[in-house]
Length: 239
Image (cartoon, rainbow, N blue to C red; front, side, top):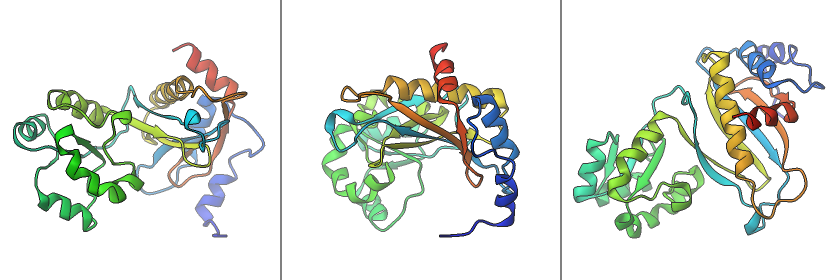
């Protein structure tokens, strides 16, 4: 098992590992225990009471955070012809309209944070599934990333403004960013509440019993801080 360094241990010493903090206390502690030289991402991790092996217990959706993620998001759009021009005019960072782009991605190039596609391109984009899929970048109608050309401007704007996709992993966990350590606590709280609300509303029909079982917040490099789930859900209820 890897050993953490001195700075991490110093940060961990500030956390009561037996305590469940209120959302505000937890986020303030995330800021206090951040020690990296860069502006760390604040992450929220959910443990869900579902079995992802069953089709009726999948959790996947998108949410637009009110204060974004605090980072420049680069968007690649698979589109050609008029759709490609629409994407370029709407602010897409890259427009993949030829075989050269597909070969570039197959060669390992992944310098983008989100990918969109128009339906006419999916017969070609399908070959990239083993490259884009593991990174959560494969355009998909369930994620809203397979869109008609006239909807590209709205989707590009939403992604750049802080639209986040979340999807349960095979261990029934969700891992999603909600901002940067440099954000004011109030902004982090609003993003946190919005994310909890979105996950609660995404409860699948096959889920039974307690759905959101555990919530932990952390920075990219810092220790995990347990959040009182009841307090978190109370915030979601008043949105």
